[in-house]
Length: 294
Image (cartoon, rainbow, N blue to C red; front, side, top):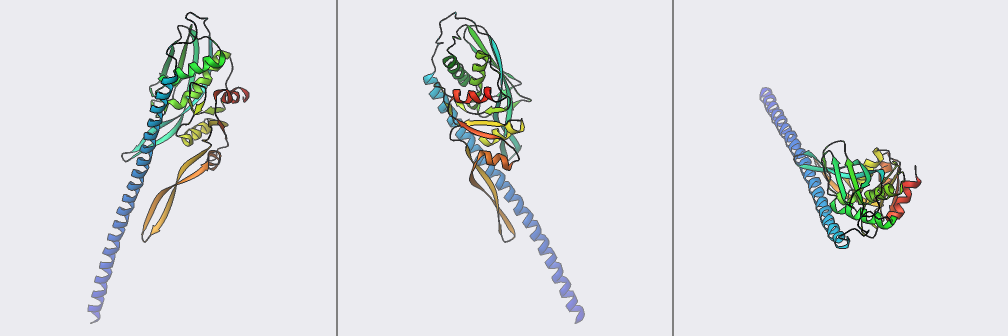
């Protein structure tokens, strides 16, 4: 009878061990599925954000093409200007970390502007290949720079060279418009621009700075590159971030991403960066920061 009881206990323990093992395997499979769902959720959110960026870019191009003059305002054969300038750009690049996850990271670029004898053209060169569309924003930048400085650029070519450390795909070209405008003005005036100041924002034909996406990623990239002042379009001093929230349901941990509004400056402080964030509405306002802060 004792032997039978022991045998029953052994069988019960064996069955419990199998059940526990199966439960562990099931739990791991569940956790793997939840991780995949989280990655898919992030990818969907990023794709939705990219879609919004593309919509805003199309709207930007449409509005600026309607306002941009078809020909130079200066007389043909005007005086030739010469000059150089350099400014830091910030952008967002696509990063494919996982087959189920596409993310975005901030990146800094170097922008060089050179004025040479020519016929009023705006020429753009990138080193190496950079997937960035600057055709409209550089034309608008040149027009705004001409209006602000009062200089005739019809006898001058503006050569814009953008350099990166590697081949990248930049997802938001128009957001470099404000920085490029400042660089062209500096080349005309002969001003030196601070390496400690960064800016993101589109440029409109009237010199106003428009809203952009990827503010948080760009701010982090600027801080990593030694920036102390980050200029953003007025009204974008606060951002929406998604915090990871875990909830326990039985043996399963449910992970959700919940939106939180936070001041960009505080967000950077939480990341360990000490950078001042300033909202600006026009190129003339932004330009002062670049020439007054060394």
